[in-house]
Image (cartoon, rainbow, N blue to C red; front, side, top):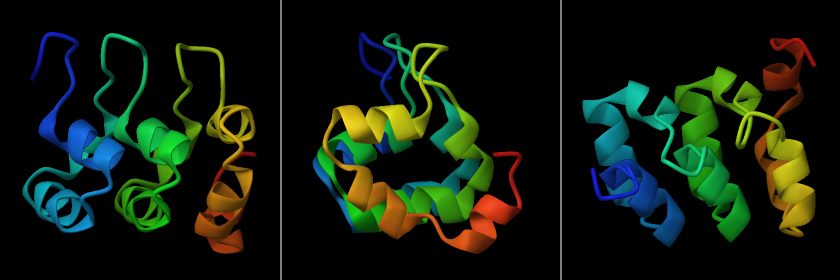
Length: 103
């Protein structure tokens, strides 16, 4: 972890390194639920940067990650709209995933 508590998975998700993300998730799937000091998980950064393949992989690995709030008060949907990435998130989340959550 770096000085902001960002993991290698967090950094790979932010930079769009899809193969690295897949390898890191295979080694430790729970890493996608680790928050940094700014209250974000890897999914949040992938959404902010528009990395669709990584968004899909993180949600596939941990579907409940879409319930994790940014800084304790914003949903991934808020983040996507604020980042003008709502189409990336909509594309990435399938009806089956939404049906299995409490949204």
